[in-house]
Amino acid sequence: MRRLMAGVLGLAAATWLTCVQADVSVLAVRLGYLPEALLWLVTSPHQVRIMRAHQPDVPILTLAEAQDLLTAIGDPRPSSLMEVARSFATAPPGAPEWPEEDDDEKWV
Image (cartoon, rainbow, N blue to C red; front, side, top):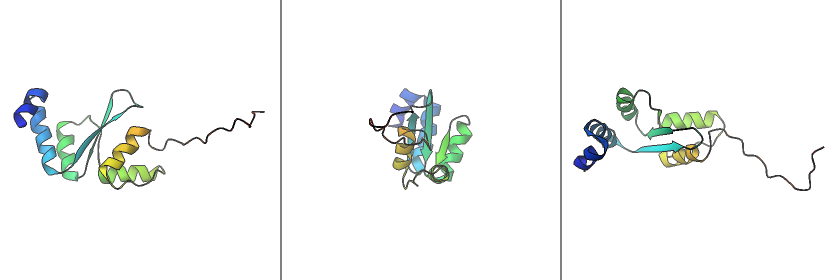
């Protein structure tokens, strides 16, 4: 598997990815509402230290950091990386949910 990753990603990237995956879960979320944005989500502070050391310009959040961010802006507190990924992938955090418009109401 590592040889396949090295061929696709390059040796440095494959080594980095192997180190990160060795600990626990890692997810990458493409943020459709920001151009070319990719957010990495990890479960442990150890993983985030490794990732930030090798990729300092890449946005990376631990589960705890993402939970704090989402609850601070009024979104429900996610309990897993998958829930965090779903929150970030569907809409910008804290995006208002607009009520459905009634056709009967007229603007004055």
